[in-house]
Amino acid sequence: MENGPDNGEVARIFARIAAVMEIQGENAFKIRAYRNAVDTLNHLDEPVTLMARENRLDTIPGFGDAIQAKTRDIIATGTTALYERLRDKVPAGVVDMLELPGLGAKTVKQLWETLQIDSVDALETAARAGRLTGIPGIGEKTVVKILEAIERGRRFANRVRIDEAIGIAAGLAGNLANDGGISVIEIAGAVRRREDSVNELDIVAVSESPEEAISRFAALPQAASVLSQSATESSITLHSGLKAHLTVAEPASFISAFAWKTGSASHWTELQNQAAKLGLDLTGKGLVRGGSLIPLETEEQLYSELGLPWITPELRQGNGEIAAALAGKLPNLITLSDIRGDVHAHTTASDGTASIAEMAKAARAFGYEYMAITDHSQSLAIAGGLSPDRLREHIRAIRDAQESAGIRIYAGSEVDIRADGSLDYDDELLKQLDIVIASAHMHNKQDRDTQTKRVIRAIENPYVDLVAHPTARLINRRDPFDIDIEAMISAAVRTGTALEINAAPERLDLSAEHARLAKDMGARIMIDTDAHSIANYQLMPYGINVARRAWLSASDVLNTLPVAEFEAWLFREKS
DNA sequence: GCCGTTTTCGGCCCGACTGTTTTCAGTCG
Image (cartoon, rainbow, N blue to C red; front, side, top):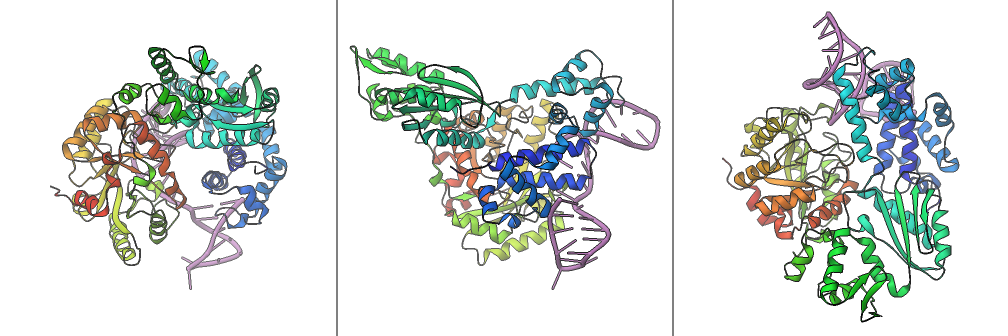
């Protein structure tokens, strides 16, 4: 294992530094420099500790002398002097309050200084007691918003996105595997099922000395406290608030323990019912026939003994997969290698970090046959959205890049859907694009009826090919906007407009549930990474996970088509 | 704090919405 803090831990310290500076009213650009560093660290595709050791920190964009030095401090000592200094000035609970959407630095500072509110809990108490309304700038609606934000924060608390969870689980398993007589160690649970986000990690191991494995688990550097412990099981809370469970199984019990801990609970119950029908008894200890354990080497064998084909963990949701398996009707699920193009990507023209040529080269390196450049439109000013003139220029640049690209490049745009459902460019300009992606980025708090009409109006524009991240949700941060999802899908089916599964782990939108509905209703689906950098193309597996949990096959997804067939759809008659 | 074919200082993506005001500050994307 790599020693020292991972990229996320370094990022977290910089994020706290930025937050405290914001509360103190520090220079906004200085704060942004730290926030940029946080963002960069979270998207870096190698360990920052490795880059530091090889004296390559100065190659990271946005890392000047000061941030490089602090990064080295954090790697060496776990902290940096500036952070320690700032931490003394502003209580951690005050910084936590900043996380609540709708509460900014100015308000937090005022609440802290005038009412001595120094935690989210204290804020809730004060809000319920009606003590906030005396503060200038805070009225009744703001109090309601604060309470809603606290409630939402609790719902999302101690959950981590799947991309982070995979890393954390691998770190725990890696640390544990070093010693303790462990011969087998696997990650199970929601991580193995590739849920969107998880609040618990499950690890299953075989060890010749279970007691030692259990005690080493509780003593891991990531562990904050022990929740419960027995001879073969241990539950701990990590510093991040996440729970983690270790099950140590006998070698003969490993397969059934692994399936048991992979779950889901309802899938496991159905498996047990299926076993009972066959006169077998299934527990986490093993599969028993007539009092004796059936030897199992693989999960395939376990399922086979139950008269079932092996069911991939993504399908183990208790959503009809056992019945489908018994009827021989499990779908032939899409895999990463089915994808032939990624048609949602940004460049430096708006808020991406790479050029057209660099993105094209990266997509080609993935073995794709086609890709699209789809930068933001004018309304999204913060992302450097393109004016009509800049888009025309950009289209020319994309056409020029085609010459030497070695991959088919489509000229496109991610066009904002305005509040009223009109698009951010006129039809005359949209007509010049190979692919038009319509996206809602703003105005996401409209009521259900208005929101539904808004998105449907965009879908009905004949030049729109795809609706990106159709519900605008952000995993663990923002709920989907209020929309009649069936009406939206119907409109997409009626007009032949595709719906996206956005593979970025902070979005995963459509969700698996909505994507399954879209498939059942006959909608066309695409899976895209929404890449803002070369590295982002690697996010495709997260979109594939969602598609698999939605029971999608390659034939349900447009960008599995070979280039000629994809173009037959893309350049269909539009009127 | 970062950055530089307008470079060692002086910029740094900005416009809209909301709730609170009565002309605007704070927050967001």
